Image 1 (cartoon, rainbow, N blue to C red):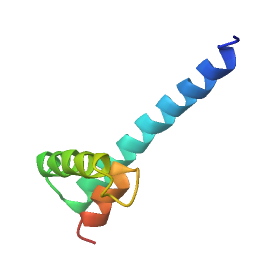
Image 2 (tube, one colour; image 1 turned 30 degrees about the horizontal axis):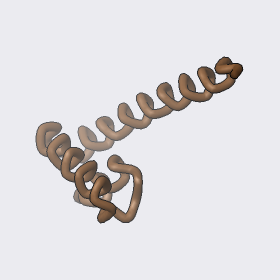
Image 3 (tube, rainbow, N blue to C red; image 1 turned 30 degrees about the vertical axis):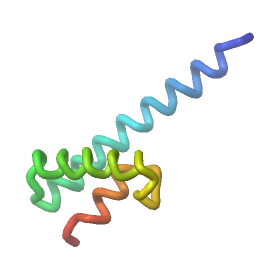
Length: 69
Protein backbone atom coordinates (compact mmCIF):
# COMPACT_ATOMS: atom_id res chain seq x y z
CA UNK A 1 0.00 0.00 0.00
CA UNK A 2 1.36 3.39 -1.01
CA UNK A 3 0.67 5.75 1.84
CA UNK A 4 2.35 8.80 0.29
CA UNK A 5 -0.86 10.13 -1.23
CA UNK A 6 -2.81 9.48 1.96
CA UNK A 7 -0.16 11.28 3.99
CA UNK A 8 -0.46 14.36 1.76
CA UNK A 9 -4.26 14.40 2.03
CA UNK A 10 -4.20 14.05 5.83
CA UNK A 11 -1.51 16.73 6.19
CA UNK A 12 -3.53 19.13 4.03
CA UNK A 13 -6.68 18.43 6.07
CA UNK A 14 -4.88 19.01 9.37
CA UNK A 15 -3.54 22.33 8.06
CA UNK A 16 -6.99 23.35 6.81
CA UNK A 17 -8.62 22.52 10.15
CA UNK A 18 -6.01 24.51 12.09
CA UNK A 19 -6.72 27.51 9.86
CA UNK A 20 -10.47 26.96 10.30
CA UNK A 21 -10.09 26.94 14.08
CA UNK A 22 -8.00 30.12 13.95
CA UNK A 23 -10.78 31.73 11.91
CA UNK A 24 -13.37 30.58 14.45
CA UNK A 25 -11.51 32.23 17.32
CA UNK A 26 -11.07 35.41 15.27
CA UNK A 27 -14.85 35.55 14.79
CA UNK A 28 -15.44 34.89 18.50
CA UNK A 29 -13.03 37.69 19.42
CA UNK A 30 -14.59 40.02 16.85
CA UNK A 31 -18.02 39.44 18.36
CA UNK A 32 -16.64 40.21 21.81
CA UNK A 33 -17.65 36.79 23.13
CA UNK A 34 -15.63 35.43 26.05
CA UNK A 35 -13.32 32.64 24.85
CA UNK A 36 -14.11 30.50 27.89
CA UNK A 37 -17.81 30.72 27.13
CA UNK A 38 -17.19 29.98 23.45
CA UNK A 39 -15.06 26.99 24.43
CA UNK A 40 -17.86 25.63 26.59
CA UNK A 41 -20.27 26.11 23.68
CA UNK A 42 -17.80 24.24 21.48
CA UNK A 43 -17.76 21.35 23.96
CA UNK A 44 -21.57 21.33 23.98
CA UNK A 45 -21.65 21.37 20.18
CA UNK A 46 -19.30 18.37 20.00
CA UNK A 47 -21.50 16.50 22.50
CA UNK A 48 -24.64 17.40 20.58
CA UNK A 49 -23.13 16.30 17.25
CA UNK A 50 -21.95 13.09 18.92
CA UNK A 51 -25.52 12.22 19.83
CA UNK A 52 -26.68 12.92 16.27
CA UNK A 53 -28.64 15.99 17.34
CA UNK A 54 -26.53 18.75 15.82
CA UNK A 55 -27.89 18.90 12.30
CA UNK A 56 -24.29 19.31 11.14
CA UNK A 57 -20.94 17.60 11.56
CA UNK A 58 -19.18 20.94 12.05
CA UNK A 59 -19.00 22.01 15.70
CA UNK A 60 -17.57 25.43 14.78
CA UNK A 61 -20.50 26.18 12.48
CA UNK A 62 -22.96 25.01 15.12
CA UNK A 63 -21.44 27.27 17.78
CA UNK A 64 -21.37 30.24 15.40
CA UNK A 65 -25.06 29.65 14.72
CA UNK A 66 -25.63 30.20 18.44
CA UNK A 67 -23.64 33.45 18.55
CA UNK A 68 -25.19 36.90 18.49
CA UNK A 69 -25.05 38.65 15.13
